[in-house]
Amino acid sequence: MINYQCGFGNQFVSECLPVILPARNSPQKVPHGLYTEQLSGSAFAMVRAQNFRSWLYRILPSVCHGQFDAFSHKTFKGHFNDEISSLQQLRWDPYPLPKKPLDFIEGLFTLAGQGDSELQQGGAIHLYSCNRSMKDRFFFNADGESLFVPQQGKLLLKTEFGLLELSPSEIAIIPRGVKFQIELLDKQARGYFIENFGLPFRLPELGMMGANALANPRDFLYPCAWYEDKVGDFELIAKYRGGLWKSALKHSPLDVVAWYGNYAPYKYNLKLFNTINTVSFDHPDPCIFTVLHSPSEIPNFSNLDFVIFPERWMVAEDTFRPPYFHRNIMSEYMGLIEGTYDAKEEGFLPGGGSLHNCMSAHGPDVNAYEKAIKEKLKPEYYGNVLAFMLESRFVWHPTKQALNCNFIQKEYTQCWKGFKKYFKK
Ligand SMILES: [Fe+2]
Image (cartoon, rainbow, N blue to C red):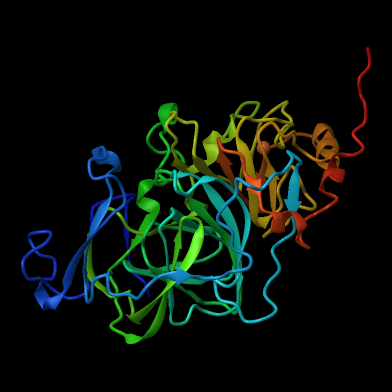
């Protein structure tokens, strides 16, 4: 049984032993012989609402590690601007489950990226597929925050701040710099691992929707302090400047006995999202489905938005109900966690994904269109879907391996072949 603390970005307080947290942030001597360390996730003088830092009280400080050397990985990529790709619509089958033993790090496959981690803009989409826990190996991301979207298999995220158990239909965020290890709670696991190089995800503004729409702050769960006091031969892997690095460690870095602050990992159950939609006709724009928002310097022109299409009632009258044909300035990657997506009832599979970049035309396939213009409209519950979209002002660059892999759907655009001309003067 894992305990959590709730509330988005609260100033949490958590300790494993009594009376650890001192009255001062950094006293001369911490109870129980612990070391004090501050982890800052924002500029020191950032405005108060976006000022993130936590104080950690740990067995050994983070500086106790060896030299960093390059860590080679065949399918993990971190630089994207040298990849030239057309605005062709793309779709992939689910990333295959592993045939040999692979942990979370070993099973990563980079699909696409955008922007630049050094400029703190954009993000990356990786897929993971693994069948063994990370053993004697820990990871942290200096390039951005990490968003986990599991599609199959439960994970246990063991972090410096405590434990998060993560199931498909939940998401988790691990902030930039936080060390963690991933244990499998099922035989195998698959999902999406997304990096956000920009400003940390926050809850979107609600405007005229009022205080209670979309994701509710109380449903975001943060870990309680948990630690292990272990010595041994461990490996610390870091993502930095687009590459992976490794360093030797003689102790487990998950040794934080107490912490307080507002910079910590969290998880959220997507089934708790309060979905807003029309009760009359037409579609509001899909920003009404935004769970988390990473801003750019232009208000609401997002660096990255995490958007979901969950189970919901559809009641719109005299309306083409599936997503209509469209071309957007925003670039969209979509993934499917479970069920069937109404604009593509075939071919878009749980664990798969599709990419439609800036001004790339897309919309329902022929079958979905023909069905939608003929069906008798009545209130209907879409109970078998959980899809997500990563939407950005920056174009996604698919990697060469993503364009040439054996799970890309070469015939994807065939789904739009065969539209009839209905026009009559
Ligand atoms: Fe779209």
